[in-house]
Image (cartoon, rainbow, N blue to C red; front, side, top):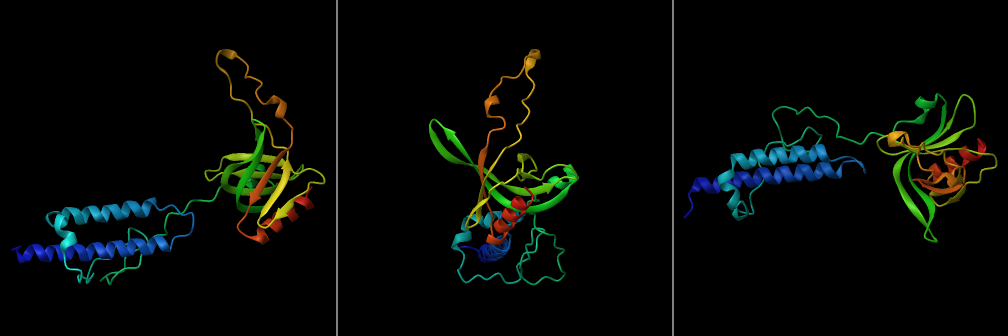
Length: 237
């Protein structure tokens, strides 16, 4: 027959774990879509590790503890975030959850007016081995910028701010809208080839493609956003 102290310790462990898991799941449900959850996960593992150290001798029997155990008086686990939790004697200082920062706007770089900016998923139409397919360029920040001098241009950056597309808006550009997606032909600026070793010049790979039209499709979260993109592009052509 097991000692009374061992049973009570398993009850306490289960009570704490129920509270920990409930708070962590509640916090996850309240995070915005696309938010980074790594910080909260690390905090969860930290709290779980402390419980493992404190109740190590009761871990193996935790599943056998009575199902009626309730998280009475269990500590509030907030992982540095605004989790819901049980009563605490002192309010726990809360910080905002870690959220992926939006990509920087091209406006600062080009010292122009940002006419449009929104999150977008971008696809490009390519032909390989005789087959034409849409290729995913990822999700990022799509902007239309009007510089102090010159024509407006479209700029797409990924989540870390790297420019994946930059193309000027030309006269009589046509933007086709289907539901929440806008499709148009652009002439992307050619990226400079990297330097070659031993003073050799870079191979002329894809040189024939320079200045050729490329079809892009930009998908947005709302119909109002894609409509605004079409208006801005066509009115600044």
